[in-house]
Structures are given as structure tokens and as C-alpha cells.
Image 1 (spheres, helix red, strand yellow):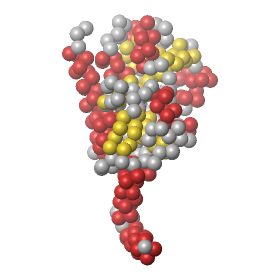
Image 2 (cartoon, helix red, strand yellow):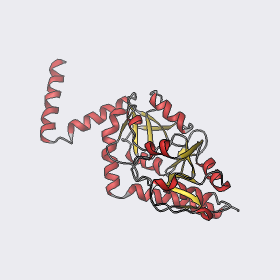
Image 3 (tube, rainbow, N blue to C red):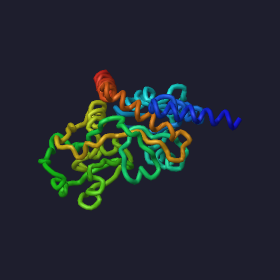
Image 4 (tube, rainbow, N blue to C red):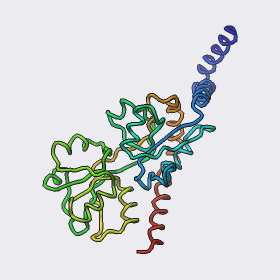
Length: 272
């Protein structure tokens, strides 16, 4: 038996020297797949067109479609629908294998291993009431305003460090609460993803109208992140390669536009 494994190891090392990305990496991926036949995942349950919950045990959206394309063949995907803050906590505890479509932060990197390639672009902007648009050339222009963000959201680009020190921002449980507060005049602006805000505005017409300001707060990408405690964490390299290949074909942005159109078309058909 020892001779057999020695021969296998020698053959693998020779193949790796001649073709670094083929035989041994394929064998490693197969080994991970064998140890992780079911991949549990979660995401923000209210973040269209990226992802949203459809009941108590399913998600829909661009992130979910991209995940099915990027996951290794033969691996079953099992969604876990939870509030976003709780989903992150359970992934940190190793109770969920994967979080899809979230921004890389130093705090999250302590318990997640992120894919080397992005899943999606995700420009972050400031949304305001149409009748209360204000000049916005820098973050300092927000200092005399009341702002809102959703619990558990991070934005990158230095904004996460800036707002607790310099801005008057309050957290609400989710995007719906924040947009309602914005429409009611209880806050002056709401910070969230451009695509997500457009999806919400299309499906939830407001009394005063909601628009975005042109200057992005952040333009950092979002990734998939595996729990460091998950037996599936070894999939991260293969999934990163798959995401890179899909991105080279423009698939992620195509999926975002596809699901945003779905939301807009559904909104048009809904009675007002």
C-alpha cells in the first residue's frame, strides 16, 4: 500500500511540474468535492437584483444564478435563508459554508476566505428624495445631513471608517425601512448599491420619487466568501477560476441586467 501511494505521489508531482494546472489540481478539486458533496450557502435576503429570498428556504437573483455556474460539478447547493446579520454570524461559527456576493473587509477576512476573482461589480451611491436633491461633490457634503444604512452592510473605499467619525448616520434593519424613512423625510439620504436601489425604486414607487446622486461612495467589487471552518473551503481556488472565466465573458453584468429587467417588468405589470 505504501508503494502504491508513493507511486501516485511521484506521478502527481511529475504531472504538476509539466502541467501545473491540470492533473494534480484536478485531483485536489475532486478530493474537495468528495468531502463536500453539499454546499450550504446564504446571502442578504433583500438585495435584488443580486439576490433575494423567495420564501423560507430559497433565494433568487443574479448571485444565485452565478453560483450555479461557478460551483464545481456534482456539488449540491443548499440555501439557508436567515436575516443578513444572523447569516454572517452563523457562517463565522462554521454553521454555513458560503456567503455569496459580499464585500471584502478586514473583519470578514478573519472568518472568511474570499474568492480571488470578483463575483460582481457593486457601485455604492447616495439615494435621495427627488424634491430634496443637494450638491454632492465629496463626503463632507453629507456632514449636515441625516443619513441611513442597512444593518450589516459595509461599503469599502474608506467610507466604513469615515461615517462613524464624521457623519450622522443611523442603521435600520433593511433597505425597505430605509427607503420608507427617506420618502417620509425622516432621513435625508440612504447609502446602498446603485443596482439594488434602482431595483427597489422600480418595484416600490414612492410618493416623492427617489433618485441617486452621481458621485459613487465606493466602487469596490463583491466576492464569494467561504467559512474558514467549512470542509468546503478548499473549493475557493477552483471557484475563483470559474468566476474569472465567467467574468471574461461578461456574464456577471449580463445577469445583473437580466434580473433588474425582471424586477422592472414585474413592477410595470403590478397594479398601482
